[in-house]
Length: 464
Image (cartoon, rainbow, N blue to C red; front, side, top):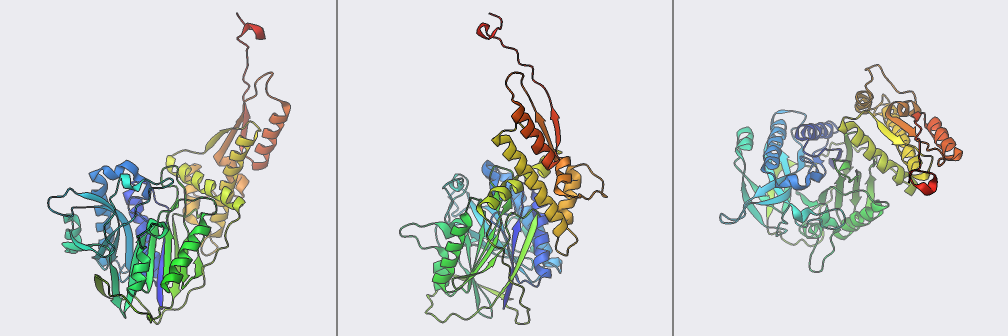
């Protein structure tokens, strides 16, 4: 049996220390759960939305500093050892001595203080919100491997001077074969291009891990389930998917979610729109030997590590029903608002509430954010509440450690201030009443400031 953990992380652009701490927390949670493999989201060292910061050399230097810190933990920390850790980071690589250094979106596999593989992305996302080819180069082959000379900061930690760089499969002890994909490589449909997971399954892979930073769109989950189920069915194997969570600093919202398919059947569907920074989903699957003809792989990395654990106990099935459209419309902005509020240094929201549809909808979204915060605080893993969310709420609201919200309306009274701005001769009593009633219903702080309107044109009795 293979037990692995899919970790959804709420990362922040260029927050190297915070991002590294969250990665280490997820590794320790995965290890405590008995997992032998930790799958994280795409670019979880820097977070996905760095944009033109990917041009800066410091971004790559600090990324390697974070990798070195995680490497040291996997070598010395018993709660980080004996678990394969897959993390994402940008890497610069010079293909030939005469060629310039190129930037790649990479997955880095770590185990017990060693780098097993640096795996660059083959297909870049350039549609919709994404412009990855602006910052990264695509790797040119599904099998080709090069030698990457590790920076001194990494060598000083682990003594390793080089690591394989490229795309291939990993063969662990007990003949367990793992393939890797990154986000867009599952989505792309191009004539003459074969998706990596199909090639790896044909070469004997038992399981393919996909690390993604897939933004939220209404009903996009349906397409993900279709692609993941299809990939697993076509390869007659297991496919595992992890996604980034929350707002990482821009306008994009990532909805998280863990998905696992076994031979075409979706067996794990994790929760989305999670407010905690780290959400770990532990899954156990049965690995069966491949019986169909196998195409001999061009390259392969042998890893002397038992990925399977026959003594492992099965974990309960993770299955969260899909949200209604209305729930998605409410949950995604609520998560986005909470992330921006707690990371901006602001103490709440100010909204001009006119009583019309637009401002009233925004007020309701903020109130839904408060309701989600209250639910998270009172749910927790053991019924004691999520202390991380409660601590963040106390900091944002400038409350003491003894503060505990009594209801969503209690939270809203701390985080939302609305203002009605009536103009003489223009504002109606109806809109004033609507604004007042809504503010009272959600218990926000509500004020009214009169705007004295004076006509300025002579045809409206103003000055000529």
